[in-house]
Length: 133
Image 1: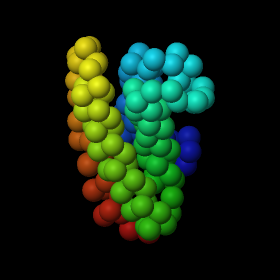
Image 2 (image 1 turned 90 degrees about the vertical axis):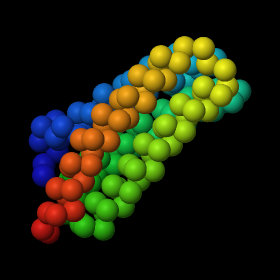
Image 3 (image 1 turned 180 degrees about the horizontal axis):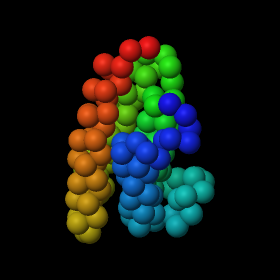
């Protein structure tokens, strides 16, 4: 697959949507308003927000890497990382909720986006696993 055709992949577009929503949620819940600059972290909520941002960005990167790679082992590693990072994001939502976040509807929106992403990811993963090199 060529880099130009990435936008035609549903899973890639879903990963971008997940990344954008994760950035918005992380920025909203962070007490450090410069969280996007990834400067020094001062509190637990900022730490979770930073991790949320990092994993959301890595999901998109790993989807891209798996789509562009001709190596079966690279694709499998990337697919494994995406599974781990989606579970991490769900754990971050739980951590924010336990930290006393009042606006749970934002967390539920992010959880819903993860579920939507996972559905398209699982379909795409099946097609990659069955693909001949």
